[in-house]
Length: 282
Image (cartoon, rainbow, N blue to C red; front, side):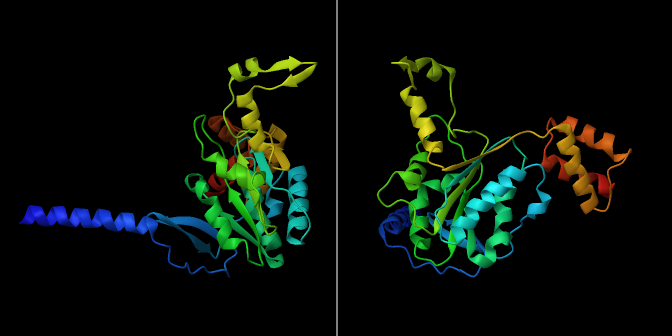
C-alpha cells in the first residue's frame, strides 16, 4: 500500500509541475517605488525583486576613466530627458570600473526617473518577459547585464540580439540596455575564423562566423573601452581610497600598495580600493 501511495504522489507531483508550465502566471505585485529591481526566480517562474538600497559608488570615486564617464553621462542624460540614446557596451580589463560606472548612474539620475534593472546571465533568455512588465511604465529603465559573454555553441545571445535591433518590436523608448564585458565582441574569436576571411575587389569580407559575432556587439550604439591602469593611475586611485578610509599615501603605504597589486597581477581601481581597506584596517 505504501509503495502504491508513493507512486501516486510522484505522478500527482509531476502532473502539477506540467500544469504550472501551461497555466497563466498569477499577476505579479511589483514594488515600483524602489530605485532598482533584480530579476529573480521562484521555481520555474521569474519575478522582479525590489532593491530599495542598492550599493553604488559615487561618480567622483571612479578615477582615471573621465572620458568613459562623460560619454555615458551624456548618453544617459539624453535618455532620461526623452531624447534619442544608444544602448551601451562597456568592455575591457577587469576591475577598471565598468559595472561600478553603470551603478553610479542611479543616484545621479534617480530623481529624473531613472531605474536600474539587473538581469543575470542565465535569465537573459527571458528578456522579452521582462520588457512586457516595464514597457508601459513612466520611468526610464536601464536593463543592466554584467559580465556579458557567451560561449561558442551558446544560443542564448539571440533574444538579446533581437531586442537590441533585430525585431519589429525593438526596445520601447523608456528602456535601454547597458552591458559590461571583458570581450569586445562578446563571443570567443579564433584564429581560424580570421584565416577564412578574404579580400574581394580590394574589400575585406569577414568569415560568416566572425560576421555573426561582430553583429551582436555592433548593435550597441555606444562602445566604451576600459584599459589596465598604469602605475601612476593605480597610485592615484590608492591615494583617493586611502584618504576615504582615513589614511594617506606615503613612504610606508606606497611600496605596500605596489606589492599588493603585484601579488594580484593587476592594477585597477578595484585593487586600489581593496588595498586601502586592508592597509587602513592594519
